[in-house]
Length: 607
Image 1 (cartoon, rainbow, N blue to C red):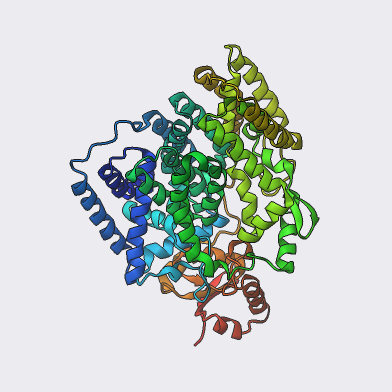
Image 2: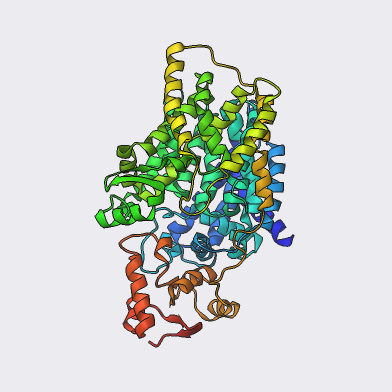
């Protein structure tokens, strides 16, 4: 309980500057607070990296921003048209957070990479962008060149006094209320109805938290990619649909800048379905695209160093082999996403695909003009080889697959159910349908694609959706009215089996790390090895060394390393394996290693 309260305190202090800035601008939404908190953190750490200081400098800058914003906004009134803070959604998030505490996994996989970066930001002085890399002589990671989200976690750790491992493991419990709040705000902004916001919150929890069991992706909200997708993206949608003045446009600019810095490709992927609204929201779309373009322009030289950007034949072949289960491959330059991928998330995804053509009955309402054309654009990109190949060339195959997750299917699902729910017996039918869908397609949430969703549902959405939109435009009939009250009950009934499934599988997905470093070794690394030293060790141990102490390593598993020319991930692994086999002293000297771990023993290298 003590750690939970300390995490709450640490997060609230980090959010304080954002609350003060939002208040000064007359904004009172959670999305605005999250946005300006990240903007404040960006300014603070930009100052740190500019003058090569430590985290204390960031704390000082955040304090100055808070005081300045409070003084500037002492007489500013909030916009009366804005929705008040969603207390119910925040309360739901608190309950979800308490549940997540019980299923918090040990820190493994990608989380070790991110913990290592947080630890360096917390412990090092003389900080600059290269400081947080895993290799002292490596290169910037194009996805995290500016460690914005890592900086947030480092500040939470500093204010709470908790170790980065505890923060990375348990931060989802205190982030869940923020996620639920911005999701509710996104639903209200898109549909213009609080009941629709509730439906969208229930849908999101079913899709991303309970559908997979074990806490789903909510259980890793502390990781940049997941936090960006679950927290920043819905906040951006909420702001995009409500920005109507300078304060709103500034907030929109800031949130897309935060997304682009936290996970650059996600800003691109979000702009793709939003482009269908350019006719009505051209100013908002341009404001959102501007920071994305600026960040991508800054990242361009770094991205050019990666071998997955405009890949050669060998790298392309490796990617096609690695992701072949998710692709339909007819040639090295002719491949697309397998139709089963779009419904792999279970009940919500399958139902949304099947119901998508019905959304055309609500055209030209704004939510329908976003939900069905936006989904069709993403489906077309994934299903047309020429489009998907070019997207993969631009962002890499590992990232282009993720673009499919940005189809606004949850919005289509909520809206379609509200259109269908025209009688009070519809929720009963929805409950039966939910049970059937959960039995047939509970979801395929593991790594890779094993069975996915029904391919027919994807083709119903793509072909049926195109036909329905064409018919709606040609007929120009009056749109059907949504029944948000009955629709919300129907959504809850349809998704009830998903929540039951999730609660029955509410256990940690991984409760222990079989490759964890012995506690005595961790203590020795922290006590005896100077900060910033380079350690050579077996690859799996090296990966954990960087997370356990503020140290650099010689090699890490290539799947967890940016494949840049400076990093040379595969060459590093070969060199470490050669050193383990021969004890060749030239290898540690090559990488300036001064400490080594062999056979579980830590020792200082000669010279």
